[in-house]
Length: 114
Image (tube, rainbow, N blue to C red; front, side):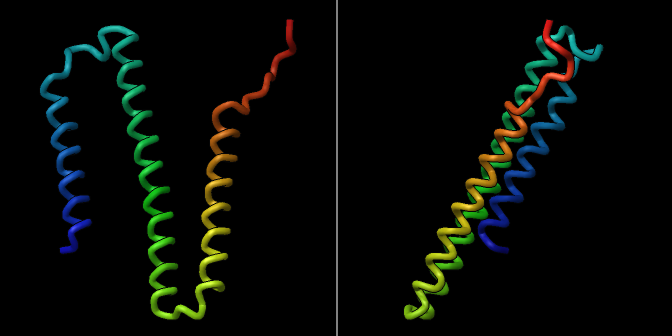
């Protein structure tokens, strides 16, 4: 097995253990109050954002590694590989930022102001 696959599997196993043990400490009712529920929603949102950031960083790292591998094999083609790589990374970053702006703060009013 590759080293990164072992790390990924151990991370998933650890998260599975944490999720299963939370059942053992569960309360009888749903949530004791609304603050408990909001606490877990905040934790889930934070984990989701962390996973998304990890995925984006992993994609950019693989792009750069592939480009540098191609340049190492054929140094004469460095100009033809390096420039599109930088443009692709910039396009990805701009696309990610534009998506976050439309999802987070782009809410419009549907009812008239009073």
